[in-house]
Amino acid sequence: MVSPTGERELSGIYHHADLYAAIYRGRGKDYESDAAAIAKHVLDRNPRAASLLDVACGTGSHLRHFARAFAHVEGIDLAPDMVRLARLELPGIAVHTGDMREFALGRTFDAVTCLFSSVGYLEDAGQLDAALGCLARHLDPGGVLVLEPWYFPENATSGSVVGDLVTVEGRTISRVSHSVRENGAHRMRVHYLVADQESGVRHLSDTHVLSLWERERYESAFERAGCAVEYLPPGEPGTSGPGLFVGVRR
Image: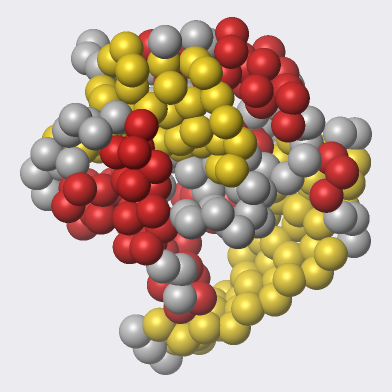
């Protein structure tokens, strides 16, 4: 979705944090094992790591488990409703509202994570550089930056359809998506049917535009941000379809 100024707006689902959380809970997303694997990647490279910032933290589902591995954790997200729910679910943990390209928290951390392919929403390579630079500025020297990319151009399909049907706490949700390659990005149209006894059935839809960058483009952004980087392909612990980049600030 693109605003009149040319920048991508928040996709509609991010204004419905409760619905977003219910979908992934119903799908069985294993945030606990993801967080444990990522914490291990951090501690393998920085055994004394005690603080972590989760960027694009969403409703805080990873953050909840990071809090078990690190003495101090914080989160930040662009979507006010996601921040609202994260704060409600995680009392005592600071969750900020901010843009990954330009936030400033006034402190640094031993680790920074940016998961769920959130960087794919950045519109161009300049914004990717800005975001990686911002994330790296919030790292202590020797700190670890873990980034989950979106798909690379060579493994990005077009015309794919994905569907889910879940029932969570008396609410049934159908989610169907169709994605195509277009102008160097994935354009994904998603439809939701949400039904419960009180409200009946309602329909929501939104569009997600996710940039397709080469592996080398991500790696060069890490280097420009002052981080040595390695890529962990799918199949490594804690990785999903796109894999993970793990950088260490020099």
